[in-house]
Image (cartoon, rainbow, N blue to C red):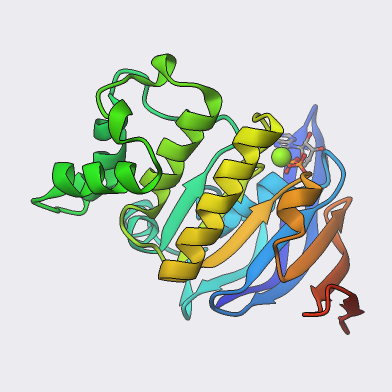
Length: 234
Ligand code: ADP
Ligand code: MG
């Protein structure tokens, strides 16, 4: 369960305080698939980064599996993040000096997995890249890089997977491959999925769509099994 309560984020820009997230309250049950949508600048990436503990809010609470993360030390947060959270960026963020295999092995090695390289090879095979293990990111297409990033994010089987516009830099064929991969991993291993996306195709696979505008939740819809939508009380 991701439990966000009265979350506010203010930053100062040019000597003025700017409210980027304004009193966000949101509960996401385990294994739910949630899309966060909204115009550019509405606070989507900021919200995702706060859920990942990459940043600290001005006020409010974020509980992941009952643990309050906003007050954790950097060190405790780094460890908690490794165990609980996989994160996928729009621009892949692979380490350019490491091969595909080494990139996927990093989180496993950090977690003390003695079989990290072997596991990483299995993960790359699972995303259809067994032939690309020793390629560096610059030698891979965007779609291939994102599949490496998906393998890396899932490496430690995190219960929460966050992705910020994971198909945003991909053409529709490569985007569809990444979507199929994420949904397949979700089906096989479970995980709560929270995806920021502008991609209607990706959003259509989610169970719930939360719309942000100007740092507030503007809409929160559950997609009914029939494909229709129901409004939620908020
Ligand atoms: P989105 O992902 O929905 O496009 P962001 O969360 O990236 O939106 O940003 C929300 C707002 O916060 C934007 O207006 C952006 O300019 C502003 N913003 C983001 N980061 C900073 C920062 N470090 N300092 C000042 N303003 C920021
Ligand atoms: Mg963004």
